[in-house]
Length: 153
Image (tube, rainbow, N blue to C red; front, side):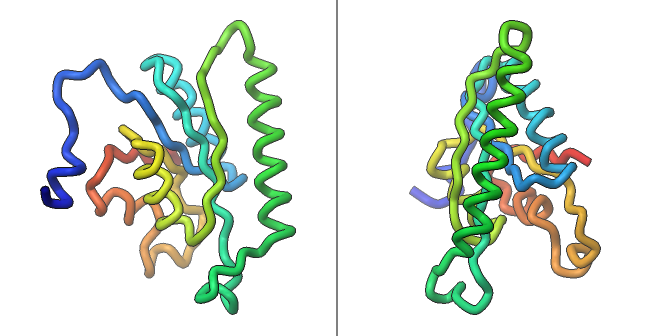
């Protein structure tokens, strides 16, 4: 079985079962998470919110995470998601999970989507000017062509 055959979409289903949304605390990622939550609610899908903990540049080849800061960010994001879920309880029910992966954002989201068997990926548009030259995570996910990707401004 080829790589392309493993990632073909099944036709005739009732919609996505798992929607992965990349979350990093930026305004665009929070909008993407809200958009993905709406999709998950309407499709009765699982919303998998994913934060990718970046690696230290000097220790990246050894796989050393930037421990304190990224774990704090993950904890803050989780608290924010729990708070939003509590505020909307009873009026906006969504099945959700929060996951953290380590690595660069693109490879972390690819790994998350693969491991969680995502049917769709939702990310925020890049807020970095440098991505015009090296390519954004969203553009790289679209070019991978493995899942439908929605980019939220």
